[in-house]
Length: 183
Image (cartoon, rainbow, N blue to C red; front, side, top):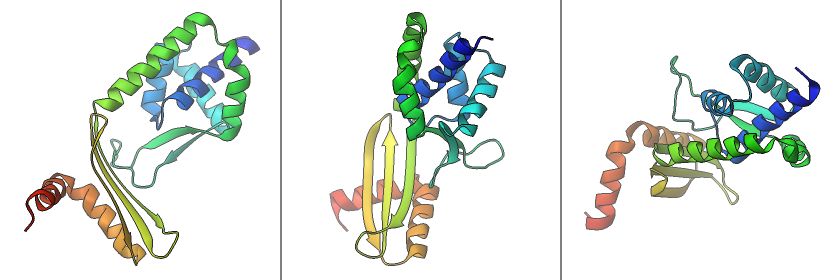
């Protein structure tokens, strides 16, 4: 494989991660293969090289609700600032037919995300004091409920997040009923 060919394939991976947020390994692999520009083994080698070179990273997100077959939270790709700089410099080198396939792949990833239901919960130290808790329930891209609350203790913030993630199907309608009907 020529050096230019390898560079183009790496740029394709950077493009996909940059234009599609929070891709899992499976989603990035599928989108890459759908470009018809690389096979599985090339994807595996190049994605690892991009991580090793600090252009992409693969990490578990705080509050991740999806799990893999082993029950572990899934890992998601992100592009680094260095990766964005490389992409900006080399994006124009992607062949025109591949650019069309990439735009289609990004659109399909976005369509799939809009059809998913997702529940997120996260907490972080508050700017003022205590802990800021962010809870979200989405369905097909629409935010059904988004709650932001400040609590005094980290343990309480953690418990709120765990309860939201574990029991959204009961908490969401109960909160909605209290908000619309009162007690």
